[in-house]
Length: 292
Image 1 (cartoon, rainbow, N blue to C red):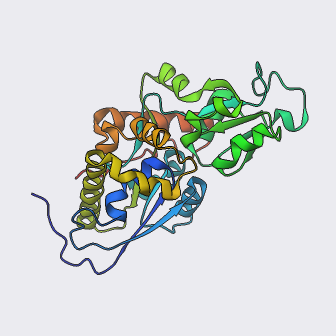
Image 2: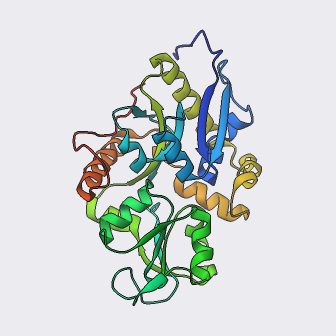
Image 3: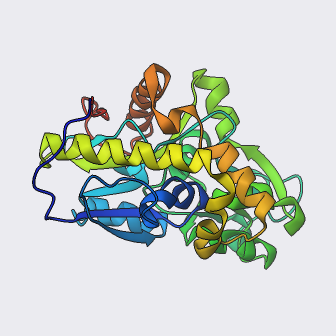
């Protein structure tokens, strides 16, 4: 039986991304479709880099962030068991503006050697550095601007996340490598991209209640898929119903409902890899999961 928090007068400050898997998962909370157990939520919808920066600046009580960013403050936060984007076949794609090219090996000089990434604390950026080293030049821009920039030849390469995974071919771009597939091959583990984290300073019973409500919201979305489409369209870059539901099918899965043993192991693997790249801090810091 779930415990109830008596005093819910202070709203939960929750920040999530505008990508379809988040608006799908939080549709029921955004639209008061489930029992919020007396809790009030103040929800911000932001770009992933804004979420990561906000986490590092201490702005959010609860937030969906890249696990790479979460690793920077692993001693201050816990990952909630529900709400993560983690799985097989979910990784970012390294795309090229021209065929038969790859960063650091096939482009002469100038802007065409540049790789665009969606933020310095995204897991996508960490994977790029893990597999391609620290030498190829990088510029960080909003994820939705990466494919248009490649089409306009402003850069030679881009690390693509979110809906672009399904539309890059129609944009006339070229696949260099699926970074998620490479992760899976090298680690035999699902790729943990991001998750819901909460400050360890929050009262334990409050954390437990927030976790339960988030899990209820995810399960509501899975049971009412068509109902969630208008909510996703309100914030999405891609408005086609089929693409939106493809996105949900890929990024909302069993590990989104509950991380499980495989999810927890994947977080440990990511922690070790982040230390190996030099893109995170203390080797003893690992992401901990709040246990309900």
